[in-house]
Image (tube, rainbow, N blue to C red):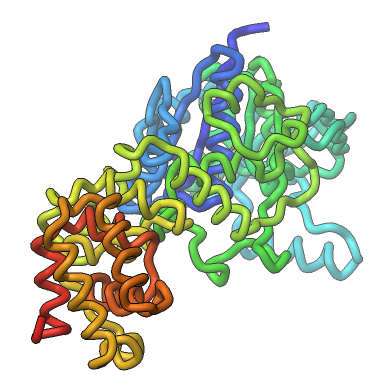
Length: 467
Ligand code: GLU
């Protein structure tokens, strides 16, 4: 068995979507697991639909997910000369032939077949055969090139996900492998590349199952080793329908923008149609040790946003604080906050990360540490009153004398509550509204210690001017 070589071969007609990312992840992990190589190949031959922006979006998505390739990216448009050479070799070897049928002719053929209740297919009128007289090529017509598909027998492959698949050659007509302008067609380029790049396992979406028997026949005609195939089932949205733009974020980078960690998205994608016992939470290195194609479900996988959110919360809580800080800092900048030097972001995150399952939400929740908060009017009306002003004043008087550590502030809070004979929220709520803008927060003493004495007093005084 030759060394494992897998590839991800997206057509750059849009962003890297969730399905593509999962295909890429599985191909990448398979190569890692077998100490093989992973290739990135951009299938940009559909010139009308491929765009440089889409190429960039795919590269960005792959980079964000850190699915690094060992070779490439190859661009099919840069390999045209090679495809044409192989095409000529096939023609010379008698595995392909020129077909001069016009569109009108083929339309008429199709129509008559349909009328007879037959499956529409090319009838092989330009296909050379031993004792066959071919028509005279019409002048001024540029022919297409068709592959001489075997007429007998079956194409069989043991799909590593779907099991054995058999297609009778009688079902397959002679595929056009080059257009009239000489450009090779999609299936042909894929075959030449998989062959020449030495791909051993083709892991791709099951929308390509129908192409596989044609590709296998082409590979055989080229004398190429046929790779193994693994066709991954599609991904359905939360609602059980085919995943589409309707479901919101289908682009991988959109998840990044929407506040998801790479670790969560990767872990989530890994479990989308693949399992390792009951393991739900695992790192990519763990995944690469475990990943195999036997445990991929052949049935469709259903997207579950709640589970992704749960994983995101898990990673927000458990990854090193410095890493979370790196993710949150640009999101604070996006909120218009430039200076995040004080208090230390990691300290703030240590206090707040348990509360959020999303990085954007986390940035919003901690923004008040770095900018004066907008006070919630409902909370203000309820908690900023002449009565609470008395309590707050008592607190400020005592607190000013302490060292402003969380412990000291905690004691001051308790002392004031006892002295004023009030319940704790009577003091904590108005304090929170003044400091944070809303009446909820994790422990107020820790928040105050992080904010620092000066900022706290300033904010309290702006709501309680007489203090
Ligand atoms: N370019 C194809 C696509 O984006 C994938 C081809 C393949 O994996 O063989 O759907």
